[in-house]
Length: 135
Image 1: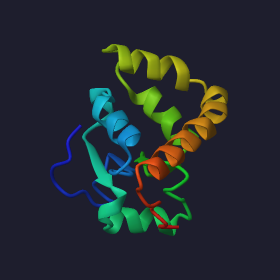
Image 2 (image 1 turned 45 degrees about the vertical axis):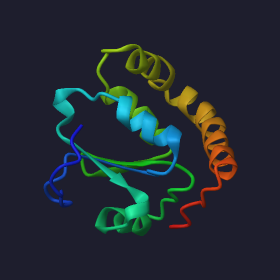
Image 3 (image 1 turned 30 degrees about the vertical axis):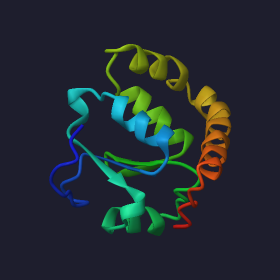
Image 4 (image 1 turned 60 degrees about the vertical axis):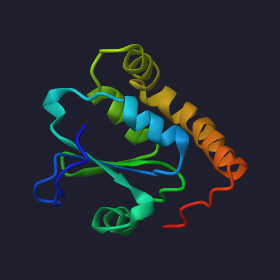
């Protein structure tokens, strides 16, 4: 994944908008490896704002409720985002294999994601970090 070089809506292949102050979110994007066929991935920390964060908000997606993935001209959010990332990830490494095993199923992703989101919100509260409040 490459955070280098700004992408525009026209040139973007894969954009992942996440909470950079969330240790779980940051670790997830750090360890996730996507297939070369997915293209270059640009990571956007939602707390930094900018046009990609504005685009997420325009779509009515709440970044306190989940990460957002722009891929193939479509926004994926929350469980759908994690599911798409699992489909796009490589089978290399234990983390990616586990991620694919759990989240390649839409049903499992939709059941598990609210639990993960609740854990994220609790962790942020325990660490004294404010929610994004970007919606």
